[in-house]
Structure formats: C-alpha cells, structure tokens
Image (cartoon, rainbow, N blue to C red):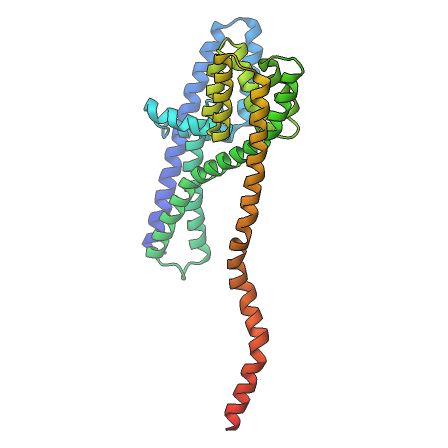
Length: 312
C-alpha cells in the first residue's frame, strides 16, 4: 500500500472525527439548553417543545449542517448583512439559512474529497499520489464553491420570473385602482391573483402588505420591495408610486401610463431576443451543419480528383 494513500485516509478520518466531535458537542449543549427552557416554562408549553424535538430528530442532516456552519459562518455584521441580502433576493428568509449554507459548502467539499479517495480505490495503479493530490484539491474547491454558483443561479431565475410577471401585475393594479379601491387593497388583491401565475412576485407584493399592516409607512415598504428584488423596473414603479403619493396626482392614471410603458418595453425585449437569434445560430451552424454540408458536397469531388491524380 502506498504511503500517499494512507496519508489521505488518515487526513479524512481525522477531519471526520473532528466534525463529528463538533456535532456531538453542539447537540449536547443544545439539549442542555432546551432542558433548562422546559423547566422554566409552564405545562402547556412543554408539548410544543417535544414537538420541536421530534421535528429536529427528523431533520438530523439539517441540524448537522447548521451546527457545522455556525463555526464557519462570518462573524462580522457587515459580512452577515451582505450574505443575508443575497439569501433574501433568492427567496430564503429563514435565519438558519446562513449556517446551513456554510455547512453545505464544507459537506460538499468533504464529499467530493471522499469521492476522490474512492476513485483511488478502484483505479489503484492508474492514479499517482501527485495526481490524486491535485485532483482532490480541485474537487474540494469545486464542492466548496458550488453552493455559491447555485445561489447566483437561483437569484437570476427569480429576478427573471418577477420581471416576466410585472406587466400583468400592473394591469391588475390598474383595474383595481380604477374600480375604486385604494393602493393597499390593490396590492393585496394583485398578490392574491398572481399566486397561480407568478408565485415569486405574489410573495413580494404580499410582504409589502404585511409590512404596511405591521405599521411601516408605504414609502418604506415600497423601498424595501425595490431593495429585495434589485430590479430596475421595480425601482421605477416604486419611485412612481412614492412620487404620486407625495404630489397628490392620480394613481390610476400614473399606473396606466406605466403599464403601457412596461408592455412596450416587454415587446421590445422580445424583439431584441428575436433579432439576436440569427447571431446565436451562427455558431451551431458553423460547428455542426457546415462541416456536414461540405463533406456531402465536396466529398465526391475529392474522390474524383484522387482517382484522376492516381491515374496520371
């Protein structure tokens, strides 16, 4: 047995035992803390504590990732706020998301490292220790940064869905406002109607209604909507609504004009995508269709020339 492989096995075992020890320590500390809380609360609250304990047992993997991520999550408030902003824009508002995210990063890195060792077992003689080292480092980096890539894709997909459903939501708001309802009621009705077609936009409009009901001013709730979505069209809409409320102009007329503008903008965006299609199709044509076309058309000619030259 090679010393390089034994070295990797020992490293994997040491890291696994260290992580498992951290998990046992956190679970022990958490159980003691929960026991003290159950002694302080009344009898009625004990049942809910036991139900939470059952849920935690069912989600042991999530608890393990969360306890692992607590030691790796950023401690500075600025870094925490930055990460939470990304999670909110991706649609995750649970406070446990931050430690679960970093726990998942470490878990995937160790999982990919274990995959490299398994590959060494099946391909014993073909993989050298140097190649295994570089390959393991590459897999660890890939597993560690894969959640970041997934988070960016999630944010991009969510923003695209909100962008697609915004003109329809504006039309519903125009209908509600022109029917005599207030802006808050129009937002609430639009959020309810958009649940079936665009759940992401409906969720954001629902949060605006919840913030207004909680006592926040409409301007602050609209600004938070623009901050959460990070979309230019949403920012323009919130600015329009704030200025309309500030200067006392007609909300229905302003929403109708902005709705027509959004319809035109969506049509122009579709035309832009359609005009880009010939340029995008040029590369597949050049790579796949053009070589086959040249082979079919020029192939017989080349055989004729070869036959003619060999005859000469």
